[in-house]
Length: 338
Image (cartoon, rainbow, N blue to C red):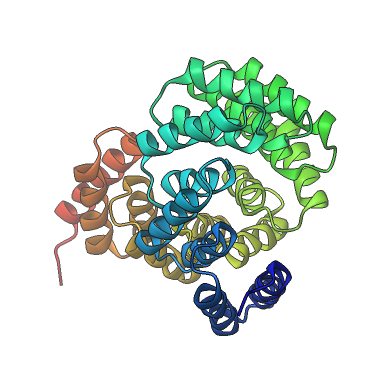
């Protein structure tokens, strides 16, 4: 029986709907049916590869994309799929670079290929070439706001904060509702000690998108450090953890907010979670040690502060950690253990 292309398109469409609805098993059934009916179709192999990629099955996804390329060697699209897999899934920057270049050889104005190439080049610190690729992205598609963001991040890495700010401003000009750009601007303003301006930027980001954990986190941290607006700080810190529960840095901030509020038991609980998830991060361990000390848990405080300094000799708070250790030793020398 000769298969009509419309039948395959319909099956792939049903698979896509199932994916959007979170019905993974249903989507897989449709895709396997399509593979049985048209195993040599480039579009079917691409759809199968994208599904496997979404399931983090990177090796079979790679094989599917390569089959799609063989089935349609003159199309750039499966090459971009494969390059995206190398870039985002396998973190293989050299393979990503080569594959994006092969896609661009077929379609020189393909914006997403230029963008991916720029990100991959930045990943291997070829910043000048990366900026050129991202500029090519914007030439092909001026509203490609992520390209402005990527250019700004490169300028931040190279220490050119004013140029980075210009890129983020350009992103907002292209899309005034681009919340991430406000977050990036706020982070640079913080580094410049422009506290009030940074707060405005973070609040602008949140107003545009209520799921911006970095904005919530940084607002909460700044408030905790200043010991101001602590009710707001607690709301912000909890929201950051709610949006990104797997990020220990946000648990760390929540603990620091509780500490600023004088709720040391809650601070200890949050910081223990952060330290358990990120045991190699000296700053988090140090924060836990501070709270132990302030809560009268002298032995735990000393052991934890020692651990922080053993992990890293120079970090924000290292000098304070040493002072606290000396103070704890002095206290123990004049107060015999029971």
